[in-house]
Length: 227
Image 1 (cartoon, rainbow, N blue to C red):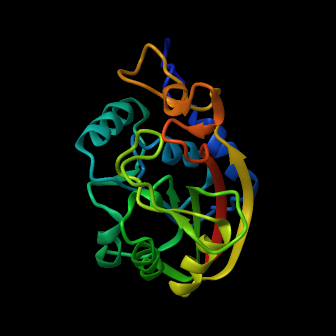
Image 2: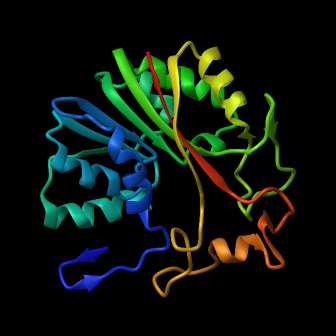
Protein backbone atom coordinates (compact mmCIF):
# COMPACT_ATOMS: atom_id res chain seq x y z
CA UNK A 1 0.00 0.00 0.00
CA UNK A 2 1.42 3.37 -1.01
CA UNK A 3 0.70 6.41 1.12
CA UNK A 4 1.96 9.51 -0.64
CA UNK A 5 5.62 8.59 -1.20
CA UNK A 6 5.79 6.03 1.62
CA UNK A 7 5.35 2.35 0.77
CA UNK A 8 3.70 0.58 3.70
CA UNK A 9 4.46 -3.12 3.33
CA UNK A 10 1.74 -4.38 5.64
CA UNK A 11 1.53 -7.93 6.95
CA UNK A 12 -1.80 -8.54 5.20
CA UNK A 13 -2.15 -7.78 1.50
CA UNK A 14 -5.78 -6.80 1.96
CA UNK A 15 -6.39 -6.04 -1.71
CA UNK A 16 -6.38 -9.82 -2.32
CA UNK A 17 -9.42 -10.28 -0.08
CA UNK A 18 -11.12 -7.21 -1.54
CA UNK A 19 -10.56 -8.47 -5.09
CA UNK A 20 -12.10 -11.82 -4.12
CA UNK A 21 -15.31 -9.99 -3.21
CA UNK A 22 -15.29 -7.27 -5.88
CA UNK A 23 -17.12 -9.24 -8.64
CA UNK A 24 -20.09 -9.77 -6.31
CA UNK A 25 -20.50 -6.20 -5.07
CA UNK A 26 -23.18 -3.74 -6.12
CA UNK A 27 -23.14 -1.01 -3.49
CA UNK A 28 -24.51 1.96 -5.43
CA UNK A 29 -26.72 4.15 -3.21
CA UNK A 30 -26.59 1.65 -0.35
CA UNK A 31 -26.00 2.19 3.36
CA UNK A 32 -22.95 0.02 4.04
CA UNK A 33 -21.25 -1.09 7.25
CA UNK A 34 -18.02 -2.99 7.92
CA UNK A 35 -17.92 -5.01 11.16
CA UNK A 36 -14.39 -5.35 12.51
CA UNK A 37 -13.20 -2.72 10.06
CA UNK A 38 -9.69 -2.43 11.53
CA UNK A 39 -8.04 0.68 10.04
CA UNK A 40 -10.81 1.16 7.46
CA UNK A 41 -9.00 -0.27 4.42
CA UNK A 42 -12.11 -1.82 2.84
CA UNK A 43 -14.20 1.27 3.61
CA UNK A 44 -11.65 3.47 1.86
CA UNK A 45 -11.78 1.12 -1.14
CA UNK A 46 -15.58 1.40 -1.21
CA UNK A 47 -15.44 5.20 -1.51
CA UNK A 48 -15.19 4.67 -5.27
CA UNK A 49 -18.44 2.68 -5.44
CA UNK A 50 -21.13 5.42 -5.15
CA UNK A 51 -22.38 4.26 -1.76
CA UNK A 52 -24.90 6.34 0.17
CA UNK A 53 -23.16 5.98 3.55
CA UNK A 54 -20.18 4.13 5.00
CA UNK A 55 -19.85 3.16 8.66
CA UNK A 56 -17.05 1.13 10.24
CA UNK A 57 -17.36 -0.74 13.54
CA UNK A 58 -14.34 -1.76 15.62
CA UNK A 59 -13.76 -1.36 19.37
CA UNK A 60 -9.97 -1.14 19.01
CA UNK A 61 -8.51 2.25 19.91
CA UNK A 62 -5.29 1.42 18.04
CA UNK A 63 -7.01 0.78 14.71
CA UNK A 64 -9.30 3.78 15.25
CA UNK A 65 -6.24 6.03 15.58
CA UNK A 66 -4.76 4.50 12.41
CA UNK A 67 -8.02 5.31 10.62
CA UNK A 68 -8.07 8.86 11.99
CA UNK A 69 -4.50 9.43 10.81
CA UNK A 70 -5.25 8.19 7.29
CA UNK A 71 -8.52 10.07 7.10
CA UNK A 72 -6.81 13.35 7.94
CA UNK A 73 -5.33 13.13 4.46
CA UNK A 74 -8.12 11.29 2.62
CA UNK A 75 -10.82 13.54 4.16
CA UNK A 76 -13.61 11.03 3.62
CA UNK A 77 -17.05 11.14 5.26
CA UNK A 78 -16.67 7.58 6.60
CA UNK A 79 -18.02 7.23 10.14
CA UNK A 80 -15.96 5.09 12.51
CA UNK A 81 -17.72 3.72 15.59
CA UNK A 82 -15.79 2.21 18.52
CA UNK A 83 -18.43 -0.52 18.79
CA UNK A 84 -18.56 -4.29 18.36
CA UNK A 85 -21.05 -6.47 16.49
CA UNK A 86 -23.11 -6.93 19.67
CA UNK A 87 -23.95 -3.20 19.59
CA UNK A 88 -25.31 -3.17 16.04
CA UNK A 89 -28.96 -4.05 16.85
CA UNK A 90 -29.08 -0.86 18.98
CA UNK A 91 -27.42 1.39 16.38
CA UNK A 92 -29.20 4.51 15.15
CA UNK A 93 -30.05 3.04 11.73
CA UNK A 94 -30.01 -0.20 9.78
CA UNK A 95 -27.93 -1.20 6.77
CA UNK A 96 -28.47 -2.43 3.23
CA UNK A 97 -25.14 -4.25 3.14
CA UNK A 98 -22.87 -5.38 5.94
CA UNK A 99 -19.39 -6.86 5.71
CA UNK A 100 -18.01 -9.15 8.41
CA UNK A 101 -14.56 -10.28 7.34
CA UNK A 102 -12.36 -12.41 9.56
CA UNK A 103 -14.49 -11.97 12.68
CA UNK A 104 -16.84 -14.91 13.29
CA UNK A 105 -14.16 -17.37 14.47
CA UNK A 106 -13.21 -14.88 17.18
CA UNK A 107 -16.74 -14.98 18.63
CA UNK A 108 -17.73 -17.49 21.30
CA UNK A 109 -21.36 -17.51 20.07
CA UNK A 110 -21.37 -17.35 16.26
CA UNK A 111 -25.13 -17.89 15.90
CA UNK A 112 -25.85 -15.00 18.29
CA UNK A 113 -23.48 -12.86 16.20
CA UNK A 114 -25.40 -13.69 13.01
CA UNK A 115 -28.70 -12.93 14.76
CA UNK A 116 -27.33 -9.51 15.76
CA UNK A 117 -26.30 -8.88 12.16
CA UNK A 118 -29.73 -9.91 10.88
CA UNK A 119 -31.40 -7.42 13.25
CA UNK A 120 -29.12 -4.72 11.82
CA UNK A 121 -30.11 -5.19 8.16
CA UNK A 122 -32.96 -3.64 6.21
CA UNK A 123 -35.46 -5.87 4.43
CA UNK A 124 -33.65 -7.74 1.63
CA UNK A 125 -30.35 -6.58 3.16
CA UNK A 126 -27.23 -8.65 2.59
CA UNK A 127 -24.22 -9.81 4.55
CA UNK A 128 -20.84 -10.62 3.04
CA UNK A 129 -18.84 -12.78 5.43
CA UNK A 130 -15.57 -14.65 5.28
CA UNK A 131 -14.22 -17.15 7.74
CA UNK A 132 -11.58 -19.81 8.05
CA UNK A 133 -13.20 -23.17 7.39
CA UNK A 134 -12.55 -26.91 7.45
CA UNK A 135 -12.39 -28.45 4.00
CA UNK A 136 -14.29 -31.60 5.01
CA UNK A 137 -17.75 -33.08 4.51
CA UNK A 138 -20.10 -32.96 7.45
CA UNK A 139 -21.85 -30.57 9.79
CA UNK A 140 -19.30 -29.87 12.51
CA UNK A 141 -16.73 -27.35 13.70
CA UNK A 142 -13.20 -27.54 15.04
CA UNK A 143 -12.84 -26.24 18.59
CA UNK A 144 -9.10 -25.61 19.12
CA UNK A 145 -7.98 -26.47 22.65
CA UNK A 146 -5.45 -23.69 23.26
CA UNK A 147 -4.74 -21.93 19.99
CA UNK A 148 -5.09 -22.13 16.21
CA UNK A 149 -2.19 -20.77 14.15
CA UNK A 150 -0.96 -19.33 17.46
CA UNK A 151 -4.21 -17.38 17.87
CA UNK A 152 -5.65 -18.03 21.32
CA UNK A 153 -8.95 -16.26 20.53
CA UNK A 154 -10.29 -18.73 17.94
CA UNK A 155 -13.42 -20.52 19.15
CA UNK A 156 -14.98 -22.38 16.19
CA UNK A 157 -13.80 -23.20 12.67
CA UNK A 158 -16.76 -24.72 10.80
CA UNK A 159 -17.16 -26.85 7.73
CA UNK A 160 -19.10 -24.99 5.03
CA UNK A 161 -22.20 -27.05 5.82
CA UNK A 162 -21.92 -26.14 9.51
CA UNK A 163 -21.52 -22.47 8.55
CA UNK A 164 -24.68 -22.72 6.45
CA UNK A 165 -26.48 -24.26 9.43
CA UNK A 166 -25.42 -21.29 11.58
CA UNK A 167 -26.93 -18.91 9.01
CA UNK A 168 -30.14 -20.93 8.85
CA UNK A 169 -30.42 -20.97 12.66
CA UNK A 170 -30.13 -17.16 12.52
CA UNK A 171 -32.99 -17.13 9.94
CA UNK A 172 -31.01 -15.90 6.94
CA UNK A 173 -32.00 -17.03 3.45
CA UNK A 174 -30.25 -17.52 0.11
CA UNK A 175 -26.94 -18.63 1.63
CA UNK A 176 -24.42 -18.60 -1.22
CA UNK A 177 -20.77 -19.64 -1.31
CA UNK A 178 -18.94 -17.08 -3.44
CA UNK A 179 -15.44 -18.55 -3.44
CA UNK A 180 -12.94 -20.47 -1.34
CA UNK A 181 -9.26 -19.64 -1.03
CA UNK A 182 -6.16 -20.98 0.67
CA UNK A 183 -4.22 -18.35 2.62
CA UNK A 184 -0.74 -18.22 1.08
CA UNK A 185 2.42 -16.45 2.16
CA UNK A 186 1.92 -13.78 -0.52
CA UNK A 187 -1.24 -12.65 1.33
CA UNK A 188 -0.02 -12.76 4.93
CA UNK A 189 3.67 -12.53 5.77
CA UNK A 190 6.14 -10.81 8.06
CA UNK A 191 7.55 -7.48 6.90
CA UNK A 192 9.74 -4.86 8.51
CA UNK A 193 6.54 -2.96 9.33
CA UNK A 194 5.31 -5.53 11.86
CA UNK A 195 6.61 -6.78 15.17
CA UNK A 196 6.28 -10.44 16.05
CA UNK A 197 5.40 -13.38 13.84
CA UNK A 198 3.22 -14.03 10.80
CA UNK A 199 1.77 -16.91 8.79
CA UNK A 200 5.10 -18.58 8.09
CA UNK A 201 5.62 -18.95 11.84
CA UNK A 202 2.09 -20.26 12.38
CA UNK A 203 2.42 -23.30 10.10
CA UNK A 204 4.19 -26.61 10.66
CA UNK A 205 7.73 -26.04 9.30
CA UNK A 206 7.73 -29.57 7.88
CA UNK A 207 4.18 -29.60 6.46
CA UNK A 208 2.55 -26.35 5.31
CA UNK A 209 -0.83 -28.10 5.10
CA UNK A 210 -0.96 -28.03 8.92
CA UNK A 211 -0.77 -25.35 11.57
CA UNK A 212 1.97 -25.42 14.18
CA UNK A 213 -0.56 -27.14 16.47
CA UNK A 214 -1.29 -29.87 13.90
CA UNK A 215 -4.68 -28.60 12.72
CA UNK A 216 -5.55 -28.12 9.02
CA UNK A 217 -3.88 -24.95 7.70
CA UNK A 218 -6.07 -21.87 7.14
CA UNK A 219 -8.44 -21.82 4.20
CA UNK A 220 -11.10 -19.15 3.76
CA UNK A 221 -14.63 -19.25 2.43
CA UNK A 222 -16.49 -16.15 1.28
CA UNK A 223 -20.28 -16.24 1.53
CA UNK A 224 -23.30 -14.01 0.99
CA UNK A 225 -26.73 -14.27 2.63
CA UNK A 226 -29.90 -12.20 2.59
CA UNK A 227 -32.44 -11.22 5.24
